[in-house]
Length: 236
Image 1 (cartoon, rainbow, N blue to C red):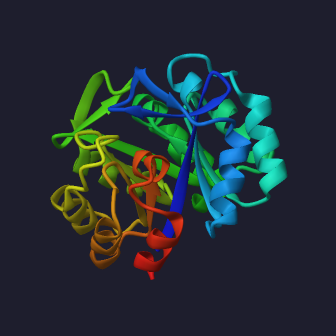
Image 2 (cartoon, rainbow, N blue to C red):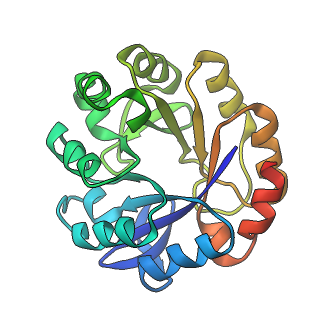
């Protein structure tokens, strides 16, 4: 089970949000210095989100993300503001390990299929962001159907993995909800990475025991509730 420290970028800074709300942003310095901090602590992959892209500025932070990829040389999964095949293709061609397709995967599901055929399924991750079992898109403002049905559809379309974000608990540092994760794992054979609520070694162990392929550490990591070392040990 992999551990992915989150490097969320807003206005050129590494930030953490609560429940995806821009006005809650807490800044933690530059993306690169935070990435290096987590890698020095033992992480070997990064979960990078271009929040400016998610909020509508698709080209924002592009050079900063390129630098992060170039300077760290580790596996990077990238999401936020990827609104077309062309956006995804450009990131994959500069070295992103896999792109996370969120709103575009719901609006244009064939993009998942096309990119999986072009680059291989391992480079294409479909985002399943859910609140109370319903997929939410467009910055988590709009509902788009049952999360389990979408997971099954993405598997049929050829996605190589799923990112399940439980929006209900995201950013609150109060722990995971195991039930929605377990139900998802029962419905798909794809590797699932979980984000939202991962706040302790016990959360990581619970996800490991459920059989997920990875966990994203965000607010709890930045606030010191959990360390990379604790998470890696629990993941083993």
